[in-house]
Length: 83
Image (cartoon, rainbow, N blue to C red; front, side, top):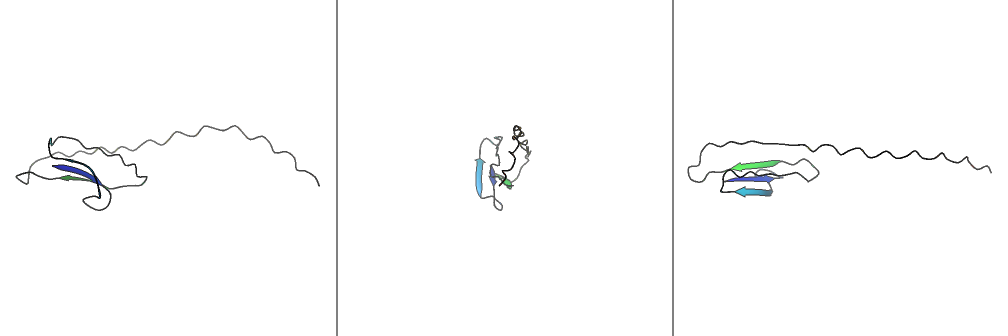
């Protein structure tokens, strides 16, 4: 069994996915919280309590947003009024 969770302390406050079979199912999570979060990946065994496994992470940062379009210059201010 493997499980992915995020937030808080281990084992994570928010479940993302929990898979018993097939053991090769991949989990994915995108952090949309607006702040850094901790993700947890938990691996458990069924009968023997041990065994080989391969763990791979792919962390992708979103590219920055495109720049805002340029605005035209403002017209000059009129001369001050005299009293």
